[in-house]
Length: 604
Image (tube, rainbow, N blue to C red):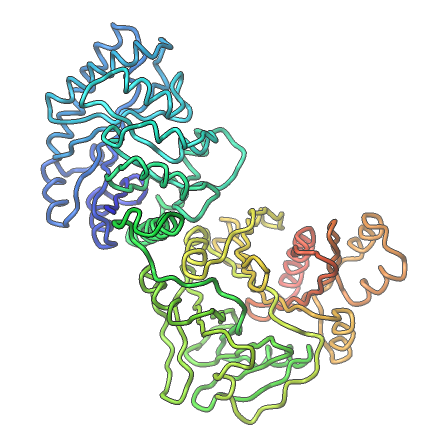
């Protein structure tokens, strides 16, 4: 289907936004009136630029506070409307968005609003324009799309229809099923936005926290299905008010936005009978990822990480036969240490390897979603990987799942056999996100690998709140917490970490201590608190204290874990889940953050 985006969703000048939308591959745009009037290009110049770029201009918006007013006020509103219609005509735009009245409405009457919309429609028609009436979620009297349609139906004018906006419908938890009552030729426009489930006034939620499809909690698949079942064949258009997107590179945001529409069309098509709306874009079918394959740490010198891994019982499985890369493993957990193209770099998480049911299908899907390809030098005798770069720069690789060691492991030579260890698998990989890429990363992991987001959490840290969004598979085999650093840090000073699941975390900690491991130190105050909060016995608390172990409990089980000190910008965590505990010890995160800050201060 035709794709469009409101220019308010992007940063930059109107001309820059048009170039970004065209380069990304959008079919059209909505022109946000402030973008036009703040620029130095005339409507005719914008119209010509869009034509050169191959973009249609689909909607001019918004025209506010017109209906539901006294007649003396309405006379002036007609004057304002005429000026807007004249501008839209100069742009060559045939539809203008009219929002339900928020500020000046004084008459709560469907008949009055319908009569005034009819007269506005008559005026619009004289300019060759239609008006799409939209119920704002915070409208003074009209805040429900069903009432907006009732008023438009009463207006009974060919130039009067409705605009359906997913945010205004779903933020108020209105049932979209009544969209079926609206004739397709009266749905003049469709606007789409997602949003996280938050508790705040709907106006602030709308103006600052909308998201692109696939990044929030709205059921956009059902909403779009309800609209398309009417026979609507206009654009699928994004209108996303978000402070982050209005500060970031418009070219990047435009690609990100189009990716969300491709993903949404594929979801809608999959949820309905085959061939139902054949014009919907469908993507290569790829089942979700099933397991971690490896995690890669990169640095100019990885020797400090090697010491750490050996203290933790990992075996050095060998050096790669063609590259300055080594493989370490314990149980089924594999860590690749890479020293190539890493001059002046300290240890950091550079890549995550995943196993998927069909690597070729995942590669095809990633390409269709415009995921940038990660470069990996591969020789004929080496196992090929699917590869893409996440929005934060982390590389993701994937191979078809295997129950045995993957073929690439044999490329490492002269190593030790895998030692017996309580370490079993990689439990989760925590990827710190700069604020600019957090939402992009959610969509990337959702659309390419089929991960789903848990409810976000906020963790207090020494320098502000850390927002955490866990992306995972349903069975928990893959867990990728995305931690967004406070803006004051801008992504600096927030270490990433790799967590390993263990069958005996206490035994592992004892063995590591005997090998000289320096744990992340935990304050005595924490253990006094544990005793009081959970009623743990004196001996149990003493054991936890002696090994710097942390503890958490839920109704489903409990959790014991410990952290290493940070090397470069990465540290390790070792965890053991008891019963059906499915969390991450979130209440211990402030303890960890404070301890890391204290250690960093002492190291200086």
